Structures are given as C-alpha cells and as structure tokens.
Length: 277
Image (cartoon, rainbow, N blue to C red; front, side, top):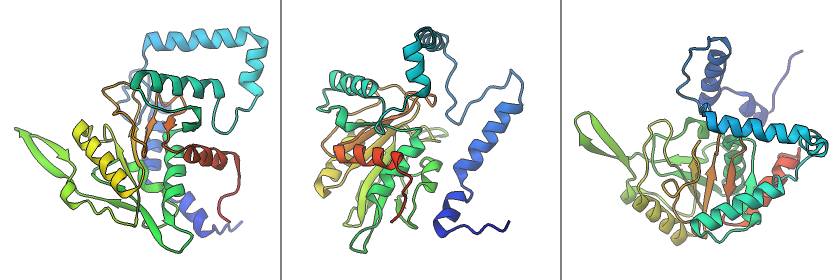
C-alpha cells in the first residue's frame, strides 16, 4: 500500500529531535541490564518512600471492588479527575496564595500534550489571516517544544546574554533589551529549570517577564519539569501567568491556567477527534 500523508499528517509523522531522543532512551532501558543508570529523559527517580506510597495506594484500590472498577473502566471528565483537580487547586491556593479554583486546572497525559494544546490554541494563523508566535525569551531550551507547532514558523527564540561566573563557569540570562514583544507575539514560554542546561531564571527575571506579559496583554507560561511544587520552583501567579508542573513523568502533569477558557479548551481538544475544520 502506497500511503500518502496529508501536509498535517506529514508533520505529525515526521521525525523530531525529542522523538529520536526518547527512542534511544527507550531502547537503552529495554535492552540494558540492571546496572544501567539512566541520567536523562525525565525518567522518574526510584525513591523507596514514594514507591511505597504507590504500592500502598494500589493495594487499597484493588482491595475495594468499586474503587478498582472506577480505576480500570470509568472515564474521567476531559479536564481530569475532579477530586484530584480540586486537591491541586487547594494545594496551590493554600501553599502560594494563588486565587485559583478547579476551573483553572487541567490534567494532560504528559507535558508534551499540554504544550501542544496551549501553543496551538494561542499561536499560528489567526481568524483574520495574521500569524502569531510563541516567544522563547532564552535559548537553549527544551528540544521537545520544536515539534509542537502545527503552523510553520510559530516559534521565535532569542539568544541569551552569557555571564562568566568563574573559571569554566557561565550562566545564561534573558537579554531584555532585545525582546521583540509586538502584536505578533501570542505568549511567552520558559522552562525553569531549563532542559538541557539546568539554567534557572532568577525570581527577578521571572517577575520582569510577567510584567512584560501584563503590559502587552499576553499570557506568560512556565514549565517546571519533573519537580514538585515548592516555593523555590514557583513565583506567585499573575492574572496572565500559567504554570505547568510534572509531579513525575508517571503522573499526568497539571497546568494552572490564568483563564478557565484555556483549561476548558484544552479539555475539549483531548475529548474530540476533530483537529482542523
């Protein structure tokens, strides 16, 4: 059979840096012996205390027929499990003082899915025929973002300022003097810490990005990969700021969105097979 993919299908099925990386890591894990130490790819750490909680909770579920049936055969709503979403909203509100409710929280099957939804909801070709972009104010950035855009040229990335901090040491900073935030910028996105360099934007840089987003009336989003929510990882959210957190690659990441419309639109995207009109 001679399959011919559509233009969109060719993009979805084509190669990508993140696809090649995860393919390499997957084969390494599948074929290596027990002594392999996986240091990349977001593989969850084997923490005995955490693994014990997983086993305990799974034992509780399997011991309760009703809970086991719900766990194995019952769909959650598109936005995610309501009880879990409410717990996430309570955690963020109580810990950080964020004025959010369950309507601001959505769950996705991986951070890649979350950002695919957000990027393509906000950027690309607009109803009036114009094109808007996602701004990455500092590179290097996460390689997985590159394959998330359905519209060609929807990403704009800026070179950093590089500070020498010691012998053979340096740090990346955002070059705020050259950030091109104009009408064609739909949103600002950063990772904190940045993958793969481990660079962490300062609180001052994050606050300045939030202020720029408010000034220009656009969302700003930060992703905290494979890290628990803690004051060291987050800044207090602003009305136009969103946060995506992977509690572990084995748990669906949660996203706190500034507007319930973003969370609900992403949920509708997950529950529908419809892609483009």
